[in-house]
Image 1 (cartoon, helix red, strand yellow):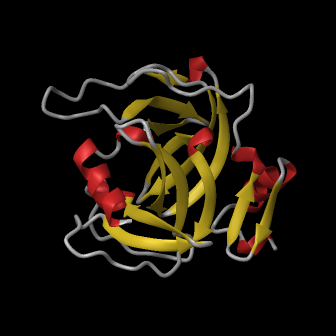
Image 2 (cartoon, rainbow, N blue to C red):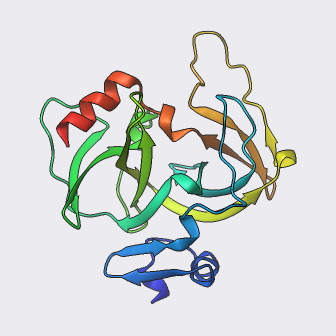
Image 3 (tube, rainbow, N blue to C red):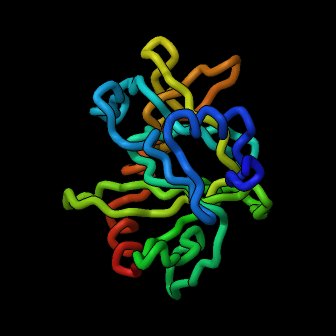
Amino acid sequence: MLEDTVGLSDRTTKTLCKQGCHLIGDTIFKNYFMPSETSSTAKGDQQKSAGKHLTFNLKNESYGIDVLKVREIIRQTSITTVPQMPNYVRGVINLRGKIIPVIDLRLRFGFTDVKDTEKTCIIVVQVKMHDGKNTQMGLVVDGVEEVVNLTHGDIEETPDFGGKISTDYIIGMAKVKGTVKTLLNIDRVLCADELAQIRAAA
């Protein structure tokens, strides 16, 4: 059933399955993504974050998030639109009885000419709200790449793009197999007001 794994390569799928994932319907559940004693998370805005990261594509760019934030990956599914939301808020989905808001990271980051393909999928993550509460949110991405284990030496600090460009949501830049992947602090991708508005919609 390797062809049913939301755009993951055969090699990545085999790796994940060896780590304890299993496929039920349109969802890949991964014990691989549950907290472990050896995993680490970012403890500051620009602090290097070594450990396992799930990498994914937005257009032709590669990004990564800490696997501790990932709850599951599902195929693109029917999304119910919610009125008076920003254009990057796709709406909400019903995930086994739980209503979860879904944002399109491609639109959130200003990419244009966004099109869904057979590899487009939704990464369900746990986001920490500014009031300290946790909520689940779906992130639409162009495709999932792999899980990489990064050391401190693999991660460089975020470059200075100028005072007018906010990089609060970027943890650092990872060097992986000759490429550069932008590591995201998913809790900071949306500002407080945006998170509150989206949570209220759900």
